[in-house]
Image 1 (cartoon, rainbow over the protein chains, first blue to last red):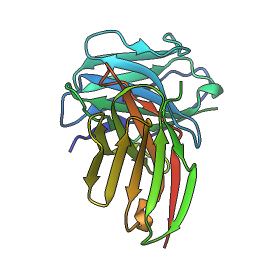
Image 2: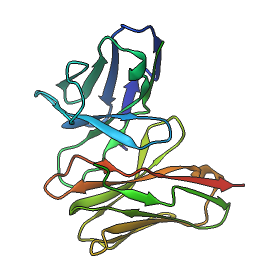
Image 3: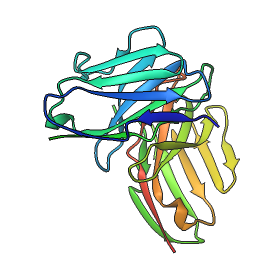
Length: 116
Length: 112
């Protein structure tokens, strides 16, 4: 199977702190990775699409300077929430997909971010 | 914009019963996928059905796709307590294999 590891699983920090979340595909090369945000009892909201070696594509309304995405290799993408504030508290989930048509996305276990 | 819309929003059944969840979408798709999410966890891919397919099976799961009605259904047969989770449909629009739009999900509770 395809395994995606997301770390950390939970972060609690003070307002103004920057937080980095890592997403790794452990057993396959992920040409594309995605970052989602999920509010309680709601669906996933796509934040950005990350392709290895190129700039991320952000969805409308998502601040690129606030949510920095780096996709340095075919197995690693990072999301940095800069100068986090309480309204950034949420569940962040990454996913990765292989190259090719009709490939499913494989998800990490998510990061629960709580900003005090 | 929200593409997939699942119904019902919540479903509660007894172990052994079948559970059916529906999904409707609005635009042309390349494929439709179903995912399961346990509380506080990431999503697990269940089934992908292509736009030229009408039905697909995987174990106790059966997915149908009606592109003329822009709808899909997920049937879980002989449900178990461990099937308790939220189920989401997601659509990949025509021309894009990668970007998915998720529905709001159905919360399934299977009572022992």
